Length: 597
Image (cartoon, rainbow, N blue to C red):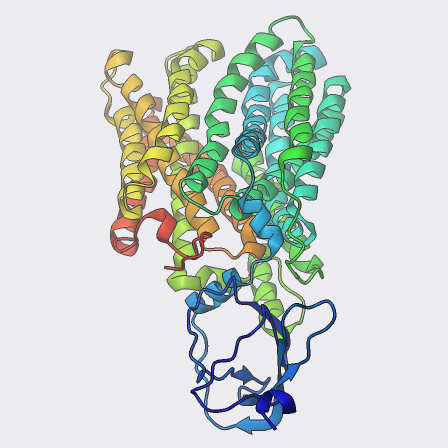
């Protein structure tokens, strides 16, 4: 009787067995489906023996049988079942690179559909993501301009009115990381749209509320809504745009919303607030109406969440509570240090800062415990920071350092023109608006530069431009014409910022798996938010301290500009020492088009 008649496979190497598309390998850890049309390996030798590894690390020699054709199947199906024999031959653990390739090989039809989106739909999807960051930036920068009008209309002090803007930034920065994890678990599309919906509702409420305390609370919920949407949007780009150059363009467009939102927000906020005493309220209605655009478009152009992602949906609630509380207290204490009448001498300010540091440490210990000792997944795996030789940590440093420099620069230039030169807020905005406009061109330049220059060159160039923008203000002789020095600095800063942040977003996405995309984006954005808070705080402290000791306010400004330049030039050092061998950004980490480098 032939082997086919007995149901047993021939064991010699001279026979070729044609397998159907569906091959089921049942091991102790569960079934693994391999589809021949998607496999990235091309081995077809009949001597290749499937190896299944048991839970203890040994090998199980499989036993194969042929299953007769079913009435609904056009081909025979091979099923491989493990026998009870455990071989003593040690196995070699798959490398990170191999695991990524195996994951990519098992992508389902859902992901194939994502890759075949029409060009028009991809363009509209990119526009939706741009609108997300555009509105987030506009809500932050535009509302700041309306503060003087709001203070007069509600009969509150400027310091009290400042919290209307600060409450938004506080909630936005604190909610990013936990929201990113929720997006990876429950689906990015639903979290993105839900976050926008929350922001719309509370934007309209902000326009109707006329109590300062209630307005601060409502603005906090507005920021929380966008904190939910933004990391989800980052993840949507990461899993949707897998091929170059579309991937680089998508992330560049995502970042393009920041400078556009900043410039439009400042101009529109000032114009609308100047209509009458209630103009600041109209601006909130406009923000709510604008947010409707990405919400409605997103319903139709954002692909459905991938059904194949078998993510553990249990939530690390304690970890989420610890990191959210730590970020809230940290950001609040730093912000309050510049608002409270006595600053850092106010007793609760340093106490809250110390408490936040303790919570950060507890969060780190707890996440390590969850990752290694408990069965449910942590909010953010600490192993992320050591993956691929610590590349994610390096990328986060490339987000942290420029944001310290840029946020400090923005604060110092505002003080430079208003306190030192005596300009009004409107005149200050006119002098600094070239930076926001240039930022648009800088973001567009990222699309051309990043695919052509190796990562360390782009990072170093960005750090150098940011550093020089700070140095120019630090060494500028008193009385120098605006066009000879300050205008040049305003042109340099956006290129430095957008190059480092733009390429950083691409790198972070490439270094994270599909089920970590939103958390990766949240980590990157959280590092940026913390850095911005520190940049403003340190610049304020150094300026006032030096001015008090020397009696010259401009001296304090100079020293602070030098300090900001040090953070910017630190990026150049990082690029030279730690990134000198990195290739193009699209080849770093686990590229979503299937390559791991």
